[in-house]
Image (cartoon, rainbow, N blue to C red; front, side):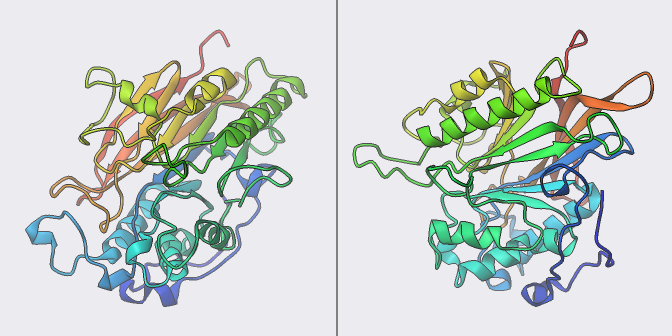
Length: 380
């Protein structure tokens, strides 16, 4: 994966806002923002970071940590965890899935967002982001937060699709091209969808959290259909659509369908904090047929993945130290590694499988709950 050259050194955490180095992402190929599968290994790795709840850095104290961790614990622990993880995983894309900052406790929302995302920028990694329900509670409106995000360095986030009337801010898709020099070098072999799941209901008779609206579902259907037609219709023609991954903040009501017997990970929250109505987006994804997994944040003490009607529904688990958590339960992040099929000729082809795992912020960045999310059938 391409990097622009300066040494990856860890800046002094106390000076983080002053030492962020801004560089442009080098284009690697036909995928959006240069996203492309690596020739060596035929992989594409995505790191999901959920609920950093970043505020004012050193002066913002940690929540829900052990007594032995309290002294000096602050937002800078979140920064340190992110640096460790980026170095260990070296992802092809970092995805921040909302509540990136905790607006209510932030003196300056723009500066808080800069500090929260700083490690990905300093290490010259491409990244994308969606909004949660707390990002806009400070000095920037929801629109203002998204406009700031799309103006930051190395970002692949988009404000909204051009020429489309759509609810929310930060609805967009990214395409990941096949390996350079192969027959699929100019095709998107992995499609990624990012949606604004809202913050809180604006309908007086409906209480609770927001949801993905009809205009967003219409955009998703059209985008998915177009991508599938391009993949299966254009040369070289493919038998099945390229797989897709979806990222948003607030879980869908369908996350309630799992018990300890049919998921991997833990479910520790009293309930699933979805909207109080079901807008039908899960059914829309099922009907579209290409999304194999959807990833959310929001409920910090859940980190499970469960499969429903062919789609894996996955929580990341809480990442940030200013976010609520549970003392003794490590902050964590989700890693998804997508693997290409290799032909008898040795040429990389379309996606073969998607494997996920969780990394914990402990002494060894422990890996847990590794499993195959999706695998192409042998007769495809």
